[in-house]
Image (cartoon, rainbow, N blue to C red; front, side, top):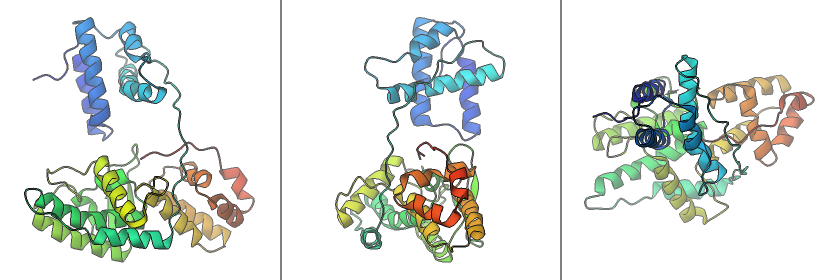
Length: 324
């Protein structure tokens, strides 16, 4: 059964397939909004080719929308038009993107005691019995390893969720990150203790869910959702430390960057080399992306300035907030 029914449904399907093949498709957001746009055009312009009027009306900000929600709803339409124009298949212009109201959030500065209490809570999860026992047993073994991986490697939560079983090289202690932000696929070297922990987890998870595709795989055979990560981190964090400033799992990535930088020697040349390697390991395409941390982590700018002297002013630009 065809998913799309507008007069340009074949183009929509081609666009969607292209994004999926390139690993740049978000079914939850893109899938829903491209289907709604296709349905709108089917109802109001049955059988017609894509026209400017369709796009302008659909992408106009609605009275019930704020700027951010309008941006999210229309992003996939702008990407679709860009796809067609690049191939010479339309003269329709994408509407300008509304400037989002981005809130700059200061990551939580973890203390050693907070982290110790948090991982203690991870390790003492008690699985429930009954029909949810399988999912509960998986949660018991997954949470301690999943969050330790974020803490020890600095990878994004998305990268951990979509990490495949084949993407973990136990012999070399290397992660092959295929699902990342944009197209920044990269490799991450693990500490030997983390490699050993992943290997133990893999054996335990295989007994509960044989034939997994994803390394951290839900009972339904899919990668865990953002909601799963957020819910479990918040629940365990509050048990360990109470509600403190909306701490989130992504803050472990910031902690990884700051902990590494704080531990480096004062030699400016070695420091710059290490900064470059850290940026690559964390999946940043360029140094400017790595410099985002300077503007949001308390005290880090001073550390970098002290270690890099006059180079600091020439390499620190205004950087936008990095999202998962």
